[in-house]
Length: 169
Image 1 (tube, helix red, strand yellow):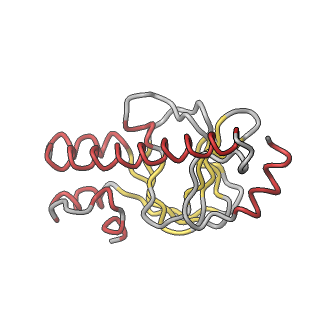
Image 2 (cartoon, one colour):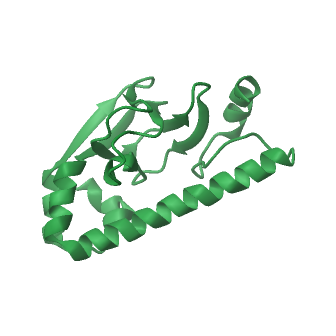
């Protein structure tokens, strides 16, 4: 049960984990596959099991975040009643992930409000961390200290990005 690897679900009761597991689909994708595009209707939340997913915003496709750590979550626009994804998600390598339909997750958290509160507190921390990383990257870029990359995982290939940044920034 890979869902136990995701920090967002740690500390929840086995009953809640089992319910979430029942509404979770494990899926595999080839590199170059788009999971969703900016502006698409947002109805699924994802947890990375293996691989890499590049999240981009805007027509130029500046990298905003590279999802590469197992257990890392993305697609959370679907959880905040926004109605549409605010970024595009493309698998940049063969990728395995868990897909959770937001409506089903909402039903579980309505029934188990304490677990829902824990989940959303942890999700807010993830969003805050990505936001701070974006601020730091933007500041470094404006100071001429690095490429414009908003939020990256620890194993992000900066050499690979530096080459692509020359054409996108």
